[in-house]
Image (cartoon, rainbow, N blue to C red; front, side):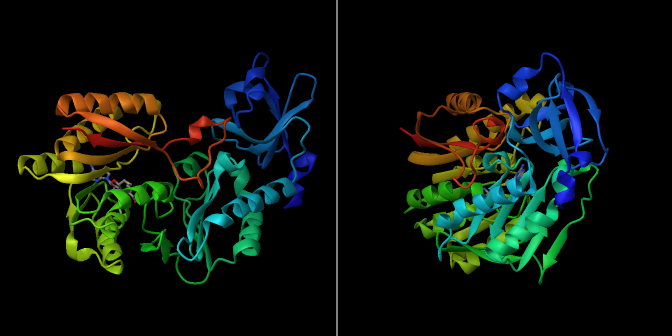
Length: 399
Ligand code: SAH
C-alpha cells in the first residue's frame, strides 16, 4: 500500500489563480473548478495541490470522476503518509472506546470529515463493522482500513456497504462485500435495549446511531403517554418509548420490511403487546388519525432527507411543514413532540421557520424546549459544516 504514497504515483493538481481562499479556509473539499492543470497517473489514489510556485498546499484522496477532485487530509507542510491515515483511524476508534460498554455496543467509529477522514464512514454494530467508502482514492487504501479494524476490534465480519450514489459517480463497484464469518446481520444493545440490525437489508448502514441520545430523551418523556412514532424505520424510538412507560405506541412507516423489523425489535424488548405497527404513507396517515380524533402525549417525527440537493429545499420545506402541521394537531394539551430534519441543505434556521409555519396553521401554541442534534460519535469538522445534517426540536404544546 505504501507505494500509492510515492511522489511518482501521486497526482499533481495546480490551484487556479484567485482560488487561494479554498485552501485558506481549510475546507477539505477541493472542487474541479478550483483546479487549473493536472498531471500524474490517472488512477492515482493520492493527490497534491500545489500553488503557482509548485509549493504544496494540501494533500488528500484524489478522484478523477467526482466534482470533489481532492478530499484534503493534510495542509501545507504536513506530509501525507500511510501512517497519517492509519493513526487517524486508530485515534477515531480510541475516541469511541468510552462510549462502548455492556449496555452500548453500537457506535459510529469514523464520521468522515468529523474525524479528519473525508469520504469514510464506519459503524460498529456489536461484532460487525459496516464500512462506507465513497471515494476512489480511499478505495485503494481499503486493506489498511481492514487491518486497523482487525487490530483494534476483531469484528466477526467487516461489511462494505457499496450501494452509495457517490460510488456510482466514482465508477466504483456497488456490489456489497463481506469479509469474515457469517452474514452481516447481528443484534446490538443500545442503552440497555436490544435491536436486530441487518446492514444488508436495511437503510444506510443498517441503524440510525445518530439518534441515540434523542431516543433516550424520548424514553424520559414517554411515561403514561400514548406515543406516535412517524417514519419509525425499525421502531427504535418506539422501543425506547415503550421502555419509558408509554401506555401505547404506534409505529408508522411506508416500508413493510422496516415495519416487520420494528415488530421483531418490540418483541425482543417485550413491548409488542402495547404497540401497533402501521404500514402507511405518513402524510396520509396523520390526516386519517386527525379525522379519527386520535390524540397523543408524545409524537416523534423523523422523516428521511426530503432535500437531497439544494434545488429541492423549497419542496422539502413544504413536505416538512405538511407532516408537522398534522402531527401538531394530534397532540394532547401539554404534549411533547420530537421533530427532526436530516436534510443537510435545510438549515436549523429554515427548519425553525417551517415549524413556526406549521404551528401557525395548526393553530397550536408551541414552545421550543430544546434544540437537538446528532450524538457525539458523529463529530462535525468546524471546517466542513456540511457534515452537520441532523437537526431537531423538542416542542411542547401550551394550551
Ligand atoms: N426514526 C428512525 C429513522 C427514520 S429513517 C430511527 O430512529 O431508526 C426514515 C424512514 O422513513 C424510513 O424507514 C422510510 O421507510 C420511511 N419513509 C420514507 N417516506 C415515507 C412516507 N412517505 N411515509 C412513511 N414512511 C416513510
